[in-house]
Length: 169
Image (cartoon, rainbow, N blue to C red; front, side, top):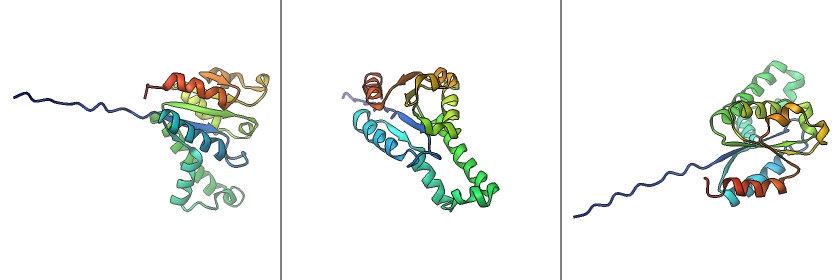
């Protein structure tokens, strides 16, 4: 009697970290992240880490619905909560994301998280795909050097991602 043994190939789902301005962006960058999430799921079956969604979960978990007010009224409490968000984002970039998609626009200039996420990804050799929306001469040399590839818009990024990751899940 012949016995067949089948091995299931476990396919790791790729995870994209969606980096970009939140604090000073009009909708915290929700819209572009939602659109990229849908596109990545439909076209590449990739999951995303969306810090807008994840910070909302932390807000609910820690009862921090008023955290923006704390910036004026209780800076220590505010900083403590933001540290939770920072720690969570860094952990995801370092340990779970396979690549970074970053929207670099004028809103990142007032913040620091996007700069840090791109730098961390560069340090640990994870690809950074930067969608640059500022004039090229205003793009920081640091950020330029940390980026694996730079695109003018999401529409030029998408064919690249298809070519790079189709069948490579």
